[in-house]
Length: 468
Image (spheres, rainbow, N blue to C red):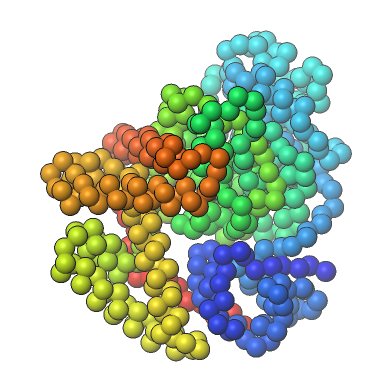
């Protein structure tokens, strides 16, 4: 029997209404559905429970529990460029089902790679069952993955970068999701690879790596908590991904793939129970270069997928309240309070079906405003920091707003992640991290002659959907 459990982020607003999912929405439950959800879990025993389980899964409000799957062979594709030692470490760590294959795609390395000279074109790596394919010119990681994808014999392909080391059970955990034919992609949690002599930067990365999307399972949906997954480690269904990655993209090609698969109606799953360790950069220069490099991909994504990767995603009323509060004027603060009260009253009228509409509306709007303030503070110090800097040169209020945002958002972020680093150094690294990413973002926007990655997304508010 199949069992699903409610997502960790789902909240009961009363005994009939859930708030959660990806994207978040209200889920109104019938009495039958409430009775079936015992201890936030549902066991599928008949067509009615199967329908409810599928609706909760599709909404991202629940996830499968204790899955078991029949072992199946996979094709593992490893793109690599000049990382012979890391490649050997990865090959030694792989433990795959019977009849699986490993395809290593050398993207024109300029020195000896795992026993092969640059002149070799194809064959098997000595001492390994891995097949070796070589590009004569460097075409980028997306093209290298696509070469492996075309050569793969199996329906499920696992992409692994050469600088990762999978932990035990990662593959079985992810493969179980593909028992659902609607799942096109499943991704593990990317954690830091532990090694001797770690410094403050590596400890920061263990807590706040761009590749680590947290401990909670989720559907992968643009503009939600898990809006993308890195291609450093992911499994895909060959029949769903078509031509694979966009080869013209040297960065953010994984986010592009997620956006395309989601737009095509496929189900994409992030499962942190599967873990893959990544060797983070431990020197400041290469680390900053990588962060800026990530930022340059925002322009291409914004042009290819309009509205899916905004710096902030706010409701109209919350955006207005944030702007008014940033102005730091008494009349603006009073107007912000009025707008919040009016919005709460309007939402309460729309929530007449819940037991306590006013209390529920106030709770929802408090959550909305908290999220809006968090996003705005992050954008001021990350996406929009050049504009914030210019404004701070001429306005004492803007200087104060930026300073408060930089400290408050940094401390809140440290509290949320609470790694091994003290708050002072954590916030310092976090701010430099944002400056580097924002610099790359602006450089990409200038190069592509677009303001698309800088434009906020303003919507009317959350959606409300019913489920019986």
